[in-house]
Image (cartoon, rainbow, N blue to C red):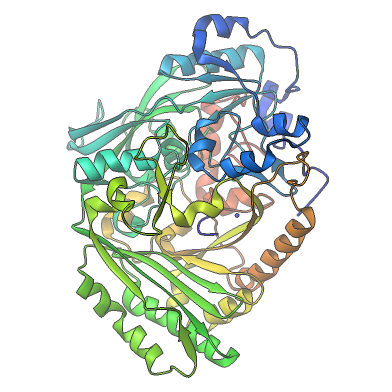
Length: 576
């Protein structure tokens, strides 16, 4: 699993409800009688009934299940189907369940209508843009879905300053909340030659990503998505459409910079700072396997030391993966370098391996590629590169609908476990590297561990650190050199579809293995923070891990702007 990740009797249940104390009258039964006609009259064809194709398949005894679950490997299909989510569930936690109806919002006014209806009737409200929530917060049985998919306009600005701001205007882009990052990159980078800090996955929704404090491959250089937010338009629980910024309702604006999506209202538009586009973007990829336990520990130690020596800076990001078969998988991205410069960076490490050929097997020739940065997100160009992207295979799909081949495993997945921890840059000090190596070696014996180096901001540019410091994300991210992720997932499955039900026993085993793998890391960093969008559903200390010292400030804002708890979800501010 490249980016994202025990059991109880609720494997087939919907998203766990929030406590009545946390969400007020919205905690009423999701199946209460509701008169939907006022909303239908108000919105006409933008008010749509929802029928889950998974539920229909189950009711038909599994007829067509193979074809349906194959479609669930297409993230564009999942995003265009209001009944579905990109992750189909989490073993022992939740299963994707369709809302009864959706407001297929086309304007902010449609969102206002949905929010006012939910507040007046007490019906549960959920919000979905890209639908990538691992905790299932963008779906709930019996609810009203605010579906943002149709709101995807992208507008570039040569010089933008929020109204009332005394800051110098800067280049920016305004993005409606239903847009996904692949479309935004096409408009901003490919066509306009600018850089916007978005997500790595091309089908992730912009609004949830920014509100969650999302990271991109080059966040060490440009900061998080939240750090680059200049202005947001949001519908709050009272039905007001507000435009917020650092100078207008600054506490609400702060909460939207990493405080969690769908928590403080429904964001309808975001304006993000853009940056000069780097000249090049490139990748270094290879696997190396150690042939003994002794050589394995030496390899892990060399990787850690080499990272500190050569890669711990704003130029490099992405992943170093350690697996139980004593293999390190390198999948690192860089910007602004030539191929010769990138090769020179890695040559000391490659030479170290070649001098110890009796101990290590490098699987194939290390790949070092570099592209003009505009080509990195150009679908027409990427489709010419074997194995890099996959296409939206629906007959009427736009030619630009591509996604990274490495994200295929996440499409339609059922999570079995997902744990993460920020690792302090202090662990890279020579005197402490051995303890980090011990934890990685011990943990990777049980289950793969991945260092996402772009998801820790230590070693980053002064701008990235300064911008990100002013967000709601746990301050631990500023000191972290990487986010360590250990996760497990299964292929698409759904309760009630014969032959395609979640494998509960497998889920149990893998969740236990992930916990064992994380135990040495937990011992090394017992109070480590975690990235709220990629974390453990069952973490009892989530307020501290996700937001640290920022949580109380966020809670005050939640109580001010949503006193009745109209918006909520698993492990969101104010939910417990």
